[in-house]
Length: 231
Image (cartoon, rainbow, N blue to C red; front, side, top):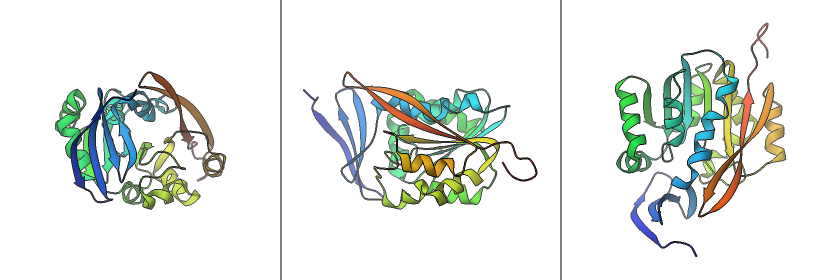
């Protein structure tokens, strides 16, 4: 039996109706009736960062996170001493406000990171950030939707096209990585990634939701180290 759902706030966001609700012990964000994120997605949200870190060399890493959600990916990035700075691009200002009000320790750590110059949350379309910063990041983490087959904002479709994948790659430094969150394996999307990146690694991540274990795929695309201008 599913726990009762309590609506905490309902607002009109930039993309439509946003709802913050509580189902049992978990906070959930809904956009236009479509599930967006829950506190039950802690592990897979953190995997948006942790799946790539073993493949990134060096220190002073610059990280871009597309989609704040409930702040778990940001929290994971700030916990890594090799990360110098994290930029979060969140399209919906109310999601930023909810994170600061309900993010508990994560929000406090994000605020401390901002004071220390290690973190910035910007209300902006992540596609605009990618386009404006070629070669600007060691890690680009994109969790704007429920994967390439379940968009919560139609305008994000371009991020999953080959042109969108190229846009993410151009925003990476040599040796950098992009991570896309996905609920499943998508052959067409894997082909788009393989056409652009030196290596593509599907990494499994797991959440436990209402006592059930769910498996997701973190698509990690690795940009090689350039030799003679290509990789």
